[in-house]
Length: 253
Figure 1 (cartoon, rainbow, N blue to C red):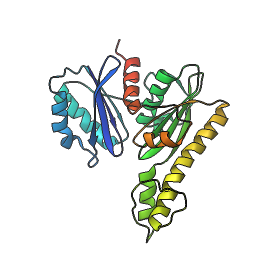
Figure 2 (figure 1 turned 30 degrees about the horizontal axis):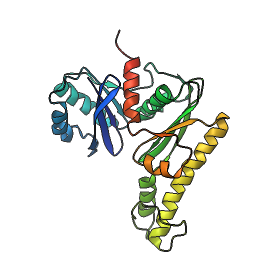
Figure 3 (figure 1 turned 60 degrees about the vertical axis):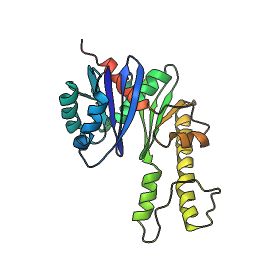
Figure 4 (figure 1 turned 135 degrees about the horizontal axis):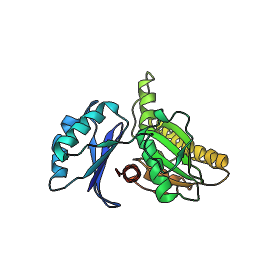
């Protein structure tokens, strides 16, 4: 059994793989730079009765990575493998700064290409705290992508970057013309979020001269799927599957 863990900016998501089947996915809140101490009890409970032979981590929180490796080494007796760009990959990297490529982006692209691609271009759309889009063309070349702000960041920028605008619930108002200050802020955030993702997907399609297969993941992916025809599939565990794909490609021989 393999354990995979995706450490993001607001939470860590994980699960166990038996072959290609994901079992018991879970989510742990992120508290502080190194949350490994607060996660110990949660990991002990989830590891009880399980024989873990390999573990893989995709992390965008460097301060948490080492602590989690130590924790898994002590509790599961495995040396957790950290996803990075110098691993064997299922595609060719055309990214000019691969050392800056987040492990979650790499894993999402790997899963999108290996599971949903092959002979067609794919886009891995991860809509969470940030919104990232990773593009792999039909020949298997990772071209790059786009990074933007998700609704939570947009809301905080307005609330903390201005003197009088409040934090508002992240809900789509009935029309784009807000009749109150709250509705006006909601319209500016939520409709701009929808239209910005729609716009970048259209631009990506034009750059590729084809409509790619778009697989979405992240907390905001169901919302986007309701409002965008360009999304072909929602996979809530895309990054976890990508970690497994990369672990499969980098088995010890």
